[in-house]
Image 1 (cartoon, rainbow, N blue to C red):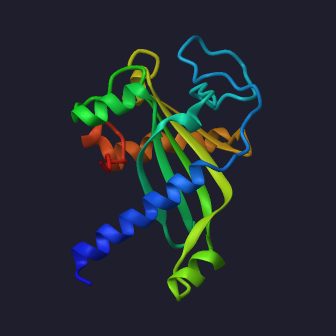
Image 2: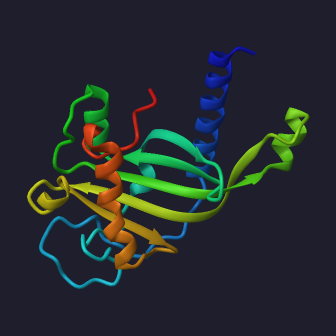
Length: 188
């Protein structure tokens, strides 16, 4: 199989895994509110620094792209976008407009006995336990000092500590500035 065919096959498998994974329930903050763009209010369900919460209904958003993180993380990931994000991706317009919300759902990558049996080799993988939920919220006024983006990273429905949130924008600024600080490219 040539490199192009292998690439297409890999993308097809990752997309299938992402769609399968998105059909599974995930632990999130019960009764969470949409990502906030109002004034900062102390909320134990909101990310430190940015005040981002887990948006209600994000699991119904469209798939932007699946991905796999090998190495020590060993994760399968699905990047999702709200309607505003998807319109911008389809148009190919940057910067993303205010109201854009991007989500990343990450799961441990685990071997699948069923897939391995069907494929005849140990090469099938599916999502295991959820590792993190991450969100980017575009509000150019509220988040002017961070390229217009607010960040939220959650484990078991609760935001991680402030130190982890302090690293968000620095990483995006160092590696994705030319694409409005967004790593994920649309996989049509």
